[in-house]
Amino acid sequence: MAVTSVDGGTGFAAAAWVVAQRGVRRTLRTPQIIVMGLVQSVAFLLIFRYVFGGAIGTGGVGYVDYMIPGLLTVSGLFAGMGAAVAVADDLASGYLDRLRSLPMPRTAAIAGQVAADTVRVALILAVSAALAFAVGFRVHAGWASALAGFGLCALFGSAFVWMFVALGLLTANPQAAQGVGFLALPLSFVSGAYVPVGTMPGWLRGFAEHQPVTVMMDAVRALTQGGAAGLGHGAGHYVGRALAWTAAIVLVSGAVAVARFRRV
Image 1 (cartoon, rainbow, N blue to C red):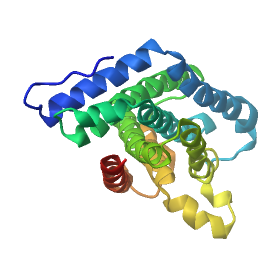
Image 2: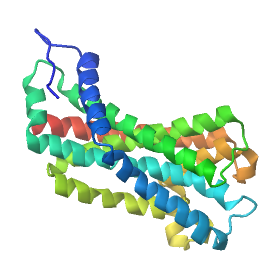
Image 3: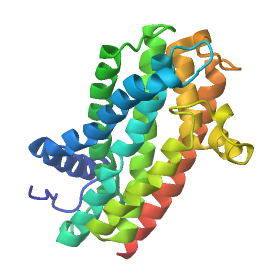
Image 4: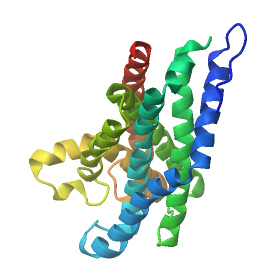
């Protein structure tokens, strides 16, 4: 796609919109990007639902209702990984250098990339949620609350897009950027996504209980299951903690991404 410029310069929102449009078109023209993002989510869904689910105790909550909020949270995290490769590829191909030569705010290039990848994350989450209902997941706290939980997952995925954009700029190499995705594995498995954190060793439990992925999935469980989730506090408590983690990730990752983009 040709980069659009405006004589005399253009504003942040207009420039970010142009970059975001290019990112969305690239995703739509290469559907394998979405398919590959779905493969992991679907594989985990089927394996934990039908292979491990019968052997994992979750108290009074059905395993599928316990696991799906965790799976959606982790899906948003993994869906964001593609942003690191996309940014590193744009950097290596010279696309970002072309943007920097245009009369537009440099931060708009980063914001547009994040917006485009957030759309991709939302698409993957929507398909994953539909599959979740197909395998037996049910909402027990009202649809408005459940939609808020879905929006929270998308917001959390967008926060990790910022983090992976920063990592993509730091590595500046598509192959190396693909490798940084493995950083997401400890966050996804050392959490309450698939098993209760109470079953973990004490030295590991403290990290698992308070790291951002567990905090977010507790919020989504509270919003989709209500009192049936068996959590110790109301949904507001968990949503507040999740939003605090999300804001912290965006602020730190955004600052690193913008600083790095100005120096490359």
